[in-house]
Length: 208
Length: 280
Image (cartoon, rainbow over all chains, first blue to last red; front, top):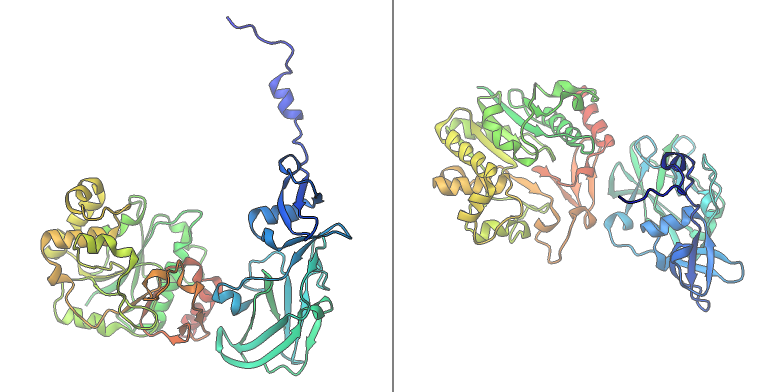
């Protein structure tokens, strides 16, 4: 009969006291271009040039929510940057309806649009996560975004859920969104929707 | 006359078919004239519809623990509470009054009718559907069970549905014997009904040319596009307005829309339909 090892701890006691190791995530990158080439737990990255990445950001890249090819390292600051260059494949990316907060199931909006129909204004706020002014209800890790600030951001005021009938068209540049933008004298019909080009993932609308 | 629609829902904690059936029932109440707007729901557990505000849109709710999966619809003739029935898929919306279709079927003593044509959102007949290889390879009648009109207790219907159920219960035997040209991975209701019609030699009795019912089948591969598409709404917008009118792309929809993608109907859509129903 095989001898029972007496040098091992009691399994139940060991399991009760077990603390899983904290996973440290690393990004491996090309030192010349800054392009991120790999991301994962520290034991899995073989790149020579690496930096540590926050868990939240790493998990978003691993799950595909943020594309790896949009991630760059700013070699002077040592910070991860996400490019805003986005491939628009679906009609919903090209003409995205900003959903009313009443119906939206979005925990962390990236862009918050407020339509004040009485004062005829439309306010656009970028989440503080991306360096904007819109406070979120939880602590967020601010992300440095590397983007072309001259990119146009356009909002269409249309008939309710029908972008064929446009009442107003509002334009700004992406780099202006670090402050909240207020469009004035906006033409709102009684029932309306707001459509935009989808540069960010989550947009919500609040109608006052 | 005793006519009504019949919807089957085999719900689970992770699906949302009861929501789709509720939206369909609301759209029927909002658009069909009196006498042609009754809806019966067959559902595996009534608790799934209790969360909705206006469950009165279901004139009858039948709790039934049938076999798992899609084949529950093959029991439509046994479970319907109506003398004349149209059995529908849950993921459909009614957009105008179609009761004259029913009048035609009843006045002409039609016992069973299953359409053999589906339409794109542009109103064209669907051709070369990539989902219908089993039908073409095995020379099956191109039946779409999403709109099945039948008369309860008719001899023709009993023979047809009994054989359909046998096919669904014994897929391997029927596939090996009759679907050698192309074996489907899953023998669904459409395939079973088509094979049943072929074996009974009643294709021309139950699916002859008619200009109705017209159902827009919004699968990506059935839009006659020259490119492959998983989801139709990746390529064209789905715009459901406050009056419960629907545009797909720039095309106003007038016929029944079988939208397929379950997330097209949201709580916002339900709210629009409910408000219309409450004001009616």
